[in-house]
Length: 288
Image 1 (cartoon, rainbow, N blue to C red):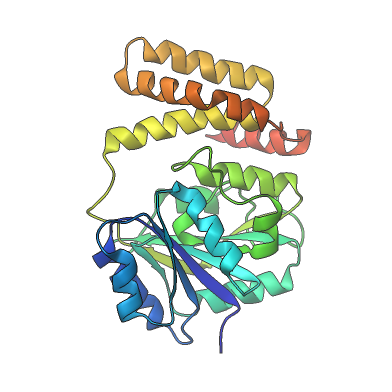
Image 2: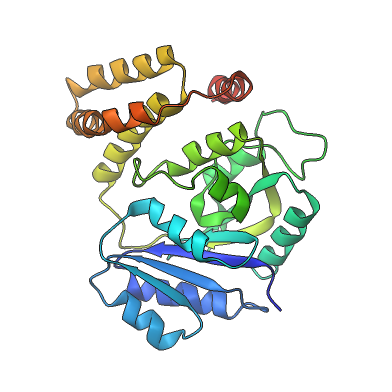
């Protein structure tokens, strides 16, 4: 019997690690339905998954869509809830069933952010600790601390909420995409809660992107998110700060250039947060 949760995994050129993750998910009782969205892999990922896991749906894309590839998996899911895993993360036994029960019991809950345990020593991810200690006001009927961020490798979402806000942004491509999605869920009136007793495991891949390239994406997307959702003075201050840093730092210079290329699209999609959500964002910044 299914938990009512489909696991969606976006992957690119991590065939062996993905196979390990799929085996972990397959071994769960009951095993959840799984959809793999292959972001244009060149290592035979789609073929390997099809050969070894016949029940797993594979959406093979001709090119890399970044984080937004998950959107296609969500649309294809036939359950009311979707859980995200990365190709190097999976869910603990009972976690998805527990998430489904909580979501069933809280109709305005759009997001469950799980506790993420990293590596063979199962150390709590630092972001998990921040979510657990969130200073945001908690609704009386919320099942856990209210959050405005999460890790995509350890989140369960209501499909209707995800689709209502448009899913992950194609403009950001990858890195920091969770924050913008959380902002949009809050704007649409969906609750977002961290739950300590729902657990995902993350064993970071050895085949990871260049740290400098990742830092470029972090800086670029922080500015784009400010342009997309924050008040004009905040967006201007973010742009000014990155421009100043770009004069002495090559990473910031690259990030600024990439942000400028995407700026027209960001301005077209600009929709500042309502005052109540902006106040919560500032509360997190002040606590930070």
